[in-house]
Image (cartoon, rainbow, N blue to C red; front, side):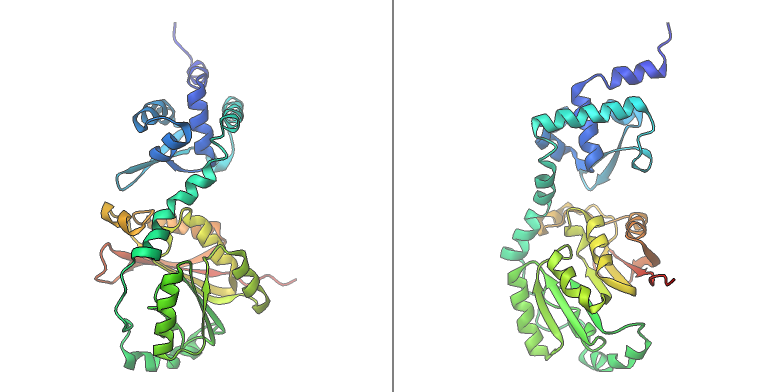
Length: 319
């Protein structure tokens, strides 16, 4: 007797461990190691149990260096089948009872823990001189009339302020944001040495509600820069969405980050992700309702190679 595809689906989803895996991966894209931690199993066990779900197309896998990440593969987040819908509901119930569903937020927070420690305790002190030539910086105000808006720029993850000598002459006000007090202290010393009177330091990150509340009364920022920030974020898509909310209509988000690479040594510097596919960046910009103006490799000696992405926030429609 031939077994129908429907019967195969019932058999596949009749296992509680698979139901838990499917439910967790529907909540968040998770590494095999993170799933093992949530379920209290070994990574080989998770890989073995997830394989039938991958073969059926219910789970998709993505490589990030040596890691494998799994997510539920459902069209546009909508469950297309009542059987799969019931399976997800049962899986969520099981994960709620065993506590694994509630632990996802702490798993995501742990992604950034190494990054936080690295920049707070062991980040190398960069050279005191900015990258830009001082004579070039002196000419930057000539470009100011060409900017669509130049009241406020925000440098997210400013580090020790490498970009501030470029932003300060072009914008009336610059807010430099970083979550590392140690790096902000060094940045403050640099700002004083460079004589940048319009730069204000702020401890935090792009998702801090206080930052949005501070920017709101000003109508939003003309420019938000995130240079080599996203690969440290547990959920880069959330960081982009938060940055978009800081912009005024017509404002620009500039992202500089790595192209995909396989240098696992970068994890020791707090990197959560080993670069990003340009298509994924475009998808995140679209999801944040930003118009993608460009995404292209950045000419640089930096290795791994960098890319530049620019998105623009639409002007609000008027009735």
